[in-house]
Length: 109
Image 1 (cartoon, helix red, strand yellow):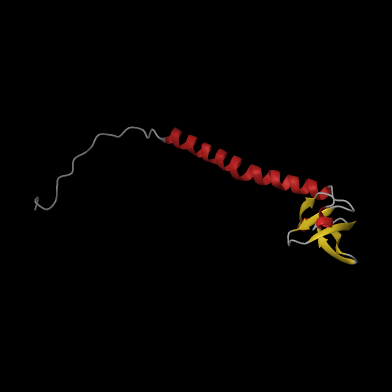
Image 2 (cartoon, helix red, strand yellow):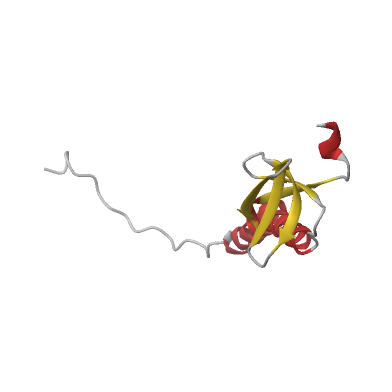
């Protein structure tokens, strides 16, 4: 019967796991890289977008997220009125404005 089952021998006690500190350092480095590569740039873009939206005024030329170009004729708390052609005005949400164009851009477009 001893041919099929091998004898079990006790082994010496193993050492303490030495990779714990190294794993924590790798985790901290990973979180730091994630923060500086993804979170921080996104927060900066959001801050710049909010600053641009707060500076909007009558006469500014803008582009909406849908690609509509227009000149602002009225600014409210949540909406702005854009003149997209002579006598054609549309009301859009302020948050949908993506870009503030240099003055005179619409005349050349």
